[in-house]
Length: 186
Ligand code: ZN
Image 1: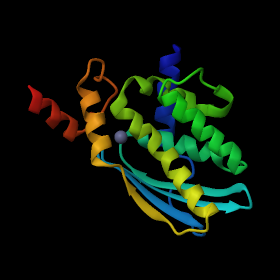
Image 2: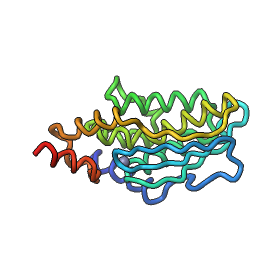
Image 3: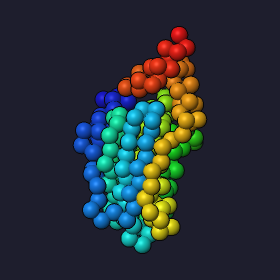
Image 4: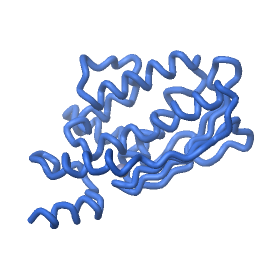
């Protein structure tokens, strides 16, 4: 099996059987993160026990990349010290930006998303779960309540512009909004 096929299998497996799905009954913090470019939405619930991730869950809908990446995130962070979980988040962010050599030990199944880095409009899908986790962790640490984050119009337009570029096809599931943007330039 070629590496790309293996990676695809890992992503589909997480999409079809998300780990830690739904809502926590005893969440310390819940945050909702939207990616309007693609229509992805995640509700990330988190409970810390001291500096350890005691419980995490994601109630989400959206494209396979967003849902699978969020599932991997929960698997990666559950039971870990928060500092280590944040190192994992940083390793995944760097993977998505093609920044340095991937740290496979920190990434776990996250390495399967390596190819997503070639598709800027999908990078935001892949990062959504980790953004949610980092937000929830920061709020929990600071003793704050949950909240809601919608990724801004400016960021969206950057992503849409990037999607028009060469090589933006074929990552699967181009959003209607991106299609509109393409028609607008035709
Ligand atoms: Zn998406």
